[in-house]
Length: 215
Image (cartoon, rainbow, N blue to C red; front, side):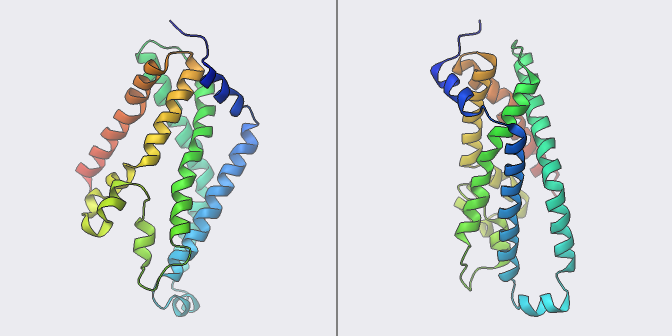
């Protein structure tokens, strides 16, 4: 049976009671700015980058990044759609009827947690030493198993999976536990089960599949 909204759920509901359209624009701009400055650092870390830039050697790099910037808002919208569907379907399978629209809106809000690893990477390499190479900046994933083990000590096959196992994913899951509790009025315990079934198990399946098919 659904419970009355807890004080924590009510505080969360009040906290995210803002215009989601403006929030989405701000979120996209933050991602774009951080990634732009990170790309600048990556270029500067490439040996003899000034000469290579003058020769036009980075043309494809700039084209690829521009396309990536343009795709960012659509990639985020797609991610919100998939994640909210997983939670809707997971809740449905466990016998909970929830609003897909509210799940989608919460997916939009919860995405803010993934700004922090991007920002940390930028700050760590804001003034990189001469010994830092561009690949190290590109592959750095703060507070992840990959950063703990060191990318240079891990086969390329496992780097993405180990980078995806990080503190921010755990915090994201906790946010969703409270978010699902707020939306469905179910207990935090029941919401934690939904998070496990709807997010962490599919994530584990995806990472396992990625490692298995990697070439």
